[in-house]
Image 1 (cartoon, one colour):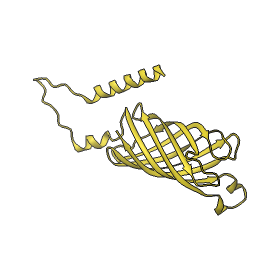
Image 2: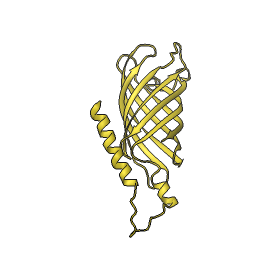
Image 3: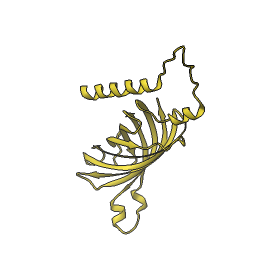
Length: 185
Protein backbone atom coordinates (compact mmCIF):
# COMPACT_ATOMS: atom_id res chain seq x y z
CA UNK A 1 0.00 0.00 0.00
CA UNK A 2 2.82 2.39 0.86
CA UNK A 3 4.46 1.74 -2.53
CA UNK A 4 1.16 2.57 -4.29
CA UNK A 5 0.97 5.88 -2.41
CA UNK A 6 4.60 6.65 -3.30
CA UNK A 7 4.09 5.87 -7.01
CA UNK A 8 0.93 8.00 -7.04
CA UNK A 9 2.74 10.90 -5.38
CA UNK A 10 5.64 10.73 -7.82
CA UNK A 11 3.33 10.50 -10.84
CA UNK A 12 1.23 13.44 -9.65
CA UNK A 13 4.27 15.61 -8.91
CA UNK A 14 5.72 14.90 -12.36
CA UNK A 15 2.32 15.74 -13.86
CA UNK A 16 2.18 19.01 -11.92
CA UNK A 17 5.67 19.98 -13.14
CA UNK A 18 4.62 19.39 -16.75
CA UNK A 19 1.83 21.95 -16.46
CA UNK A 20 3.60 24.66 -14.48
CA UNK A 21 5.79 27.08 -16.29
CA UNK A 22 8.47 29.35 -15.01
CA UNK A 23 8.76 32.80 -16.44
CA UNK A 24 11.95 34.75 -16.67
CA UNK A 25 12.55 38.32 -17.71
CA UNK A 26 13.89 37.03 -21.03
CA UNK A 27 10.80 34.96 -21.94
CA UNK A 28 7.28 36.32 -22.20
CA UNK A 29 4.57 34.18 -20.61
CA UNK A 30 2.56 32.16 -23.12
CA UNK A 31 -1.21 32.29 -22.83
CA UNK A 32 -3.16 29.05 -22.87
CA UNK A 33 -5.55 28.64 -25.80
CA UNK A 34 -8.98 26.97 -25.84
CA UNK A 35 -7.53 24.02 -27.77
CA UNK A 36 -5.05 23.47 -24.91
CA UNK A 37 -8.01 23.19 -22.51
CA UNK A 38 -9.63 20.54 -24.73
CA UNK A 39 -6.35 18.61 -25.00
CA UNK A 40 -6.10 18.00 -21.24
CA UNK A 41 -9.71 17.00 -20.58
CA UNK A 42 -8.30 13.61 -19.62
CA UNK A 43 -5.18 13.89 -17.47
CA UNK A 44 -2.93 12.16 -14.95
CA UNK A 45 -3.81 12.25 -11.22
CA UNK A 46 -7.50 12.40 -12.09
CA UNK A 47 -10.10 11.34 -9.54
CA UNK A 48 -13.73 10.80 -10.58
CA UNK A 49 -17.12 9.72 -9.29
CA UNK A 50 -19.82 8.19 -11.43
CA UNK A 51 -23.43 7.08 -11.20
CA UNK A 52 -25.34 5.00 -13.71
CA UNK A 53 -28.36 2.91 -14.58
CA UNK A 54 -27.64 -0.83 -14.86
CA UNK A 55 -29.28 -3.56 -16.89
CA UNK A 56 -28.36 -7.20 -16.17
CA UNK A 57 -28.89 -10.20 -18.45
CA UNK A 58 -27.87 -13.65 -17.20
CA UNK A 59 -25.89 -15.97 -19.46
CA UNK A 60 -28.45 -18.78 -19.32
CA UNK A 61 -30.87 -16.49 -21.20
CA UNK A 62 -28.66 -16.93 -24.27
CA UNK A 63 -28.26 -20.70 -23.82
CA UNK A 64 -31.99 -21.39 -24.17
CA UNK A 65 -31.98 -20.21 -27.79
CA UNK A 66 -33.88 -17.03 -26.99
CA UNK A 67 -34.31 -14.31 -24.45
CA UNK A 68 -36.53 -14.74 -21.42
CA UNK A 69 -38.08 -11.37 -20.53
CA UNK A 70 -38.44 -12.36 -16.86
CA UNK A 71 -34.68 -12.65 -16.39
CA UNK A 72 -33.87 -8.99 -17.07
CA UNK A 73 -32.91 -6.99 -14.00
CA UNK A 74 -32.50 -3.25 -13.67
CA UNK A 75 -30.84 -1.12 -11.03
CA UNK A 76 -28.21 1.47 -10.25
CA UNK A 77 -24.47 1.74 -9.81
CA UNK A 78 -22.05 4.11 -8.07
CA UNK A 79 -18.30 4.13 -8.55
CA UNK A 80 -15.04 5.99 -8.22
CA UNK A 81 -11.77 5.84 -10.12
CA UNK A 82 -8.27 7.27 -9.99
CA UNK A 83 -5.97 7.60 -13.02
CA UNK A 84 -2.24 7.54 -12.24
CA UNK A 85 -1.46 8.53 -15.82
CA UNK A 86 -3.63 9.85 -18.62
CA UNK A 87 -4.12 6.24 -19.77
CA UNK A 88 -3.97 3.89 -16.75
CA UNK A 89 -6.12 3.92 -13.64
CA UNK A 90 -7.97 1.85 -11.06
CA UNK A 91 -11.62 1.94 -10.18
CA UNK A 92 -14.22 0.40 -7.96
CA UNK A 93 -17.97 0.24 -8.16
CA UNK A 94 -20.99 -1.17 -6.39
CA UNK A 95 -24.29 -1.95 -8.00
CA UNK A 96 -27.70 -3.12 -6.93
CA UNK A 97 -30.52 -4.53 -9.06
CA UNK A 98 -34.11 -5.63 -8.67
CA UNK A 99 -34.71 -9.29 -7.95
CA UNK A 100 -36.33 -11.91 -5.73
CA UNK A 101 -33.94 -11.29 -2.82
CA UNK A 102 -32.73 -7.70 -3.25
CA UNK A 103 -29.78 -6.56 -1.14
CA UNK A 104 -28.49 -3.03 -0.61
CA UNK A 105 -25.35 -3.86 -2.63
CA UNK A 106 -25.48 -6.83 -4.99
CA UNK A 107 -21.91 -6.79 -6.27
CA UNK A 108 -18.68 -4.90 -5.50
CA UNK A 109 -15.89 -4.90 -8.10
CA UNK A 110 -12.42 -3.42 -8.49
CA UNK A 111 -10.84 -2.94 -11.91
CA UNK A 112 -7.68 -1.94 -13.72
CA UNK A 113 -8.67 0.52 -16.47
CA UNK A 114 -6.88 1.39 -19.71
CA UNK A 115 -8.31 4.35 -21.69
CA UNK A 116 -7.24 6.02 -24.93
CA UNK A 117 -8.42 9.64 -25.27
CA UNK A 118 -8.91 10.57 -28.93
CA UNK A 119 -7.25 13.95 -29.47
CA UNK A 120 -9.37 16.89 -28.40
CA UNK A 121 -12.71 15.24 -29.31
CA UNK A 122 -13.67 14.51 -25.70
CA UNK A 123 -14.06 10.80 -26.57
CA UNK A 124 -12.11 8.11 -24.72
CA UNK A 125 -12.71 4.40 -25.37
CA UNK A 126 -11.58 2.17 -22.50
CA UNK A 127 -11.18 -1.45 -21.49
CA UNK A 128 -11.13 -2.80 -17.95
CA UNK A 129 -10.83 -6.01 -16.00
CA UNK A 130 -10.80 -7.10 -12.40
CA UNK A 131 -12.54 -9.03 -9.67
CA UNK A 132 -15.05 -8.56 -6.89
CA UNK A 133 -17.64 -10.16 -4.66
CA UNK A 134 -21.30 -10.93 -5.29
CA UNK A 135 -23.71 -10.72 -2.33
CA UNK A 136 -27.00 -11.42 -4.14
CA UNK A 137 -28.53 -14.93 -4.02
CA UNK A 138 -25.43 -17.05 -3.33
CA UNK A 139 -22.35 -15.14 -2.12
CA UNK A 140 -19.27 -15.65 -4.22
CA UNK A 141 -16.24 -14.28 -6.01
CA UNK A 142 -16.69 -12.78 -9.49
CA UNK A 143 -14.17 -11.76 -12.13
CA UNK A 144 -14.35 -10.36 -15.60
CA UNK A 145 -13.94 -7.34 -17.80
CA UNK A 146 -15.48 -5.15 -20.42
CA UNK A 147 -15.32 -2.23 -22.81
CA UNK A 148 -16.73 1.27 -22.72
CA UNK A 149 -16.78 4.76 -24.16
CA UNK A 150 -16.73 8.08 -22.32
CA UNK A 151 -17.59 11.48 -23.77
CA UNK A 152 -16.67 14.70 -21.96
CA UNK A 153 -18.16 17.83 -23.48
CA UNK A 154 -16.39 19.85 -20.76
CA UNK A 155 -13.34 19.19 -18.57
CA UNK A 156 -15.00 17.94 -15.37
CA UNK A 157 -18.26 16.34 -16.59
CA UNK A 158 -18.98 13.51 -18.98
CA UNK A 159 -21.26 10.67 -20.05
CA UNK A 160 -20.30 7.02 -20.38
CA UNK A 161 -21.61 3.66 -21.54
CA UNK A 162 -19.98 0.30 -20.98
CA UNK A 163 -20.67 -3.41 -21.03
CA UNK A 164 -19.04 -6.15 -18.99
CA UNK A 165 -19.13 -9.88 -18.52
CA UNK A 166 -18.69 -11.35 -15.03
CA UNK A 167 -17.83 -14.98 -14.40
CA UNK A 168 -19.08 -16.19 -11.04
CA UNK A 169 -17.68 -19.08 -9.04
CA UNK A 170 -20.95 -20.31 -7.48
CA UNK A 171 -23.69 -18.97 -9.80
CA UNK A 172 -24.21 -18.65 -13.56
CA UNK A 173 -22.07 -16.06 -15.37
CA UNK A 174 -23.80 -12.86 -16.42
CA UNK A 175 -23.35 -9.68 -18.37
CA UNK A 176 -24.56 -6.18 -17.78
CA UNK A 177 -24.51 -2.75 -19.32
CA UNK A 178 -24.25 0.68 -17.68
CA UNK A 179 -25.05 4.19 -18.90
CA UNK A 180 -24.42 7.21 -16.73
CA UNK A 181 -22.61 10.39 -15.83
CA UNK A 182 -19.10 10.98 -14.52
CA UNK A 183 -17.70 13.94 -12.59
CA UNK A 184 -13.90 14.27 -12.53
CA UNK A 185 -11.43 16.36 -10.55
